[in-house]
Length: 227
Ligand code: 5RP
Image (cartoon, rainbow, N blue to C red; front, side):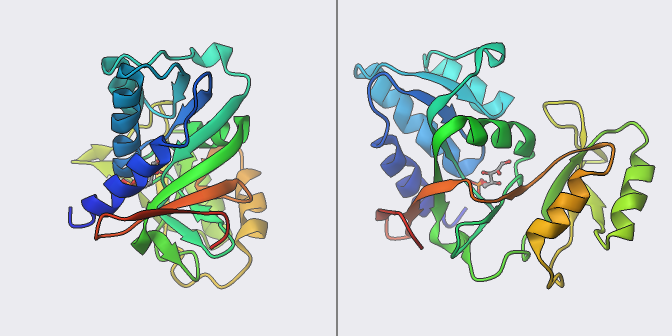
């Protein structure tokens, strides 16, 4: 992918923020992959941390690299969580879940004292919604959930993996809602979506982002408190 250099720069820079003794949340996606890669390198050089991953994929990467993992039934708090985003606006509100890990990503982000967001510069937007909004829903009775979402004008496609429905690590489906023409208040809409029985979580991450590490195509990265 053409912006791999920017993603790598952001991921690697964020790994510098991890300190000895920290409990760390590991994000999911191609940018998080680079963060975990650098963190493994730092652990091999003596950094002592414990981590919990937001997906099976990130967990497998961390485990293979020798990072000590916290079992999910022992998750209480984390010092930091480092994760990517599909879009982040200037108020640091985000759409996440492009990699299908939104449910665990939100639990882990909410358990961390600070969520560090790692993005290539193209992820920063003025208005959210160009990227589809992933909504995790149960497979049980899913057409009825989709119908209730439709009544809120939330329509989209069930995510597919080749010819079959994509199934999350939690055994659920994802509806990728098209929000391109949405001009209302995302947060209000989110409150309505989450009340629908069978909706597990949405990819709207509100007031969770702490510092943002932005990677650029020339290989630079900077850490910003505000955008
Ligand atoms: C996974 C996510 C990812 O953080 C998001 O999709 C960004 O991915 P990438 O770093 O590959 O662009 O939310 O569920």
